[in-house]
Amino acid sequence: MDKNIRIDVHHHFFLDAKQKKKRNGEIGWRTPEENLPWHPTLSLKAMDALGIQTAILSPPPLSSGAIGSENRAFARTHNSYAAKLCNVYPERFGFFACLPTLNDVEGALSEICHALDHLKADGIALISSYGEGIHAKYIGDDSYDPIWKELDRRQAVVFLHGAQTPSSTPYPHDFLGLPISEVPNETFKAAAHLVVTGRKRKYPNVKIILAHLGGSTPFLAARVAILSKHMGCTLTPEEILQDFKSFYYETALGAHEVTLTAMEKFVPLDHILFGTDFPAVSIEMASWYTDNLENFYNGDARKLDAVTRRNALNLLPRLRLQ
Image 1 (cartoon, one colour):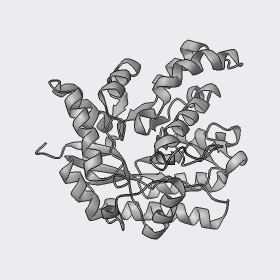
Image 2 (cartoon, helix red, strand yellow):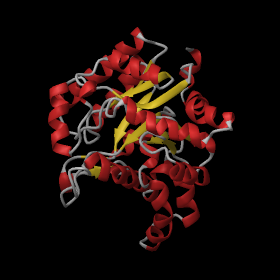
Image 3 (cartoon, one colour):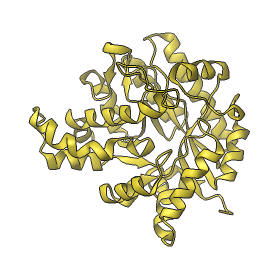
Image 4 (spheres, rainbow, N blue to C red):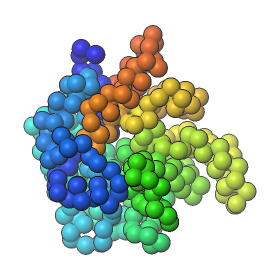
């Protein structure tokens, strides 16, 4: 593509290369060496190569940490940096603000206010669960209701990424680290939790984007519809499926003929967005999925434009003013 027209809603930034490498060793992933240390010029180069006009930045999904000033400072530092970058490159970057651990409800509410009102963030980035091990809580937990209520009041956009949480067993192979084998299922578990607890229906004004085409969500939604109803969920199977279909789904590391065919059957076209996951992956890896997307919609310029650009413009109207 000669002209940069795409809008990438899944684009990370890393402020601490040493910490990122350390975390990579813990989760079984290698961020491409050429992307560390990260600098905005690396993203701009990738965006030009991939035909991307604007990337919506979000911090890498991290373990939530303990309640306290350090956790709040982490969120504020990343959000302030992203806002400054958007001011320098207003047509090239937007950002989803991160929050301190949601277990710090007061801190999370404060950062929502600061990020959306003062830093002019395009939305909020959340991970699937907060806390460690058996003490972790998924994002539909009752204690997080004040946060969802505020996001609903603001009609906020939320970018939801699966946490890099190990299962009860080690990941199966060095080629199948947590980002490959666990993160997609964590996204599904968070989405399903929001549905069966009624949070997705209770807060309908929050527009939630699920990373990586929702991970395993499209393929397990029908399983939840019947089995969770059997286990006591008060929603009907039809209501459960309806709520799953109300999420938005972005294509990073998921665009393939099989998955895109399933998504066309599962959600309206205007609920599919374009993403790359750069710089967690290389330009070449992102290009493979982007080429798949191009090939899938070959001959239908209207659909391709909707997925790669127009749907994001409708969801993030600030971008239309650039």
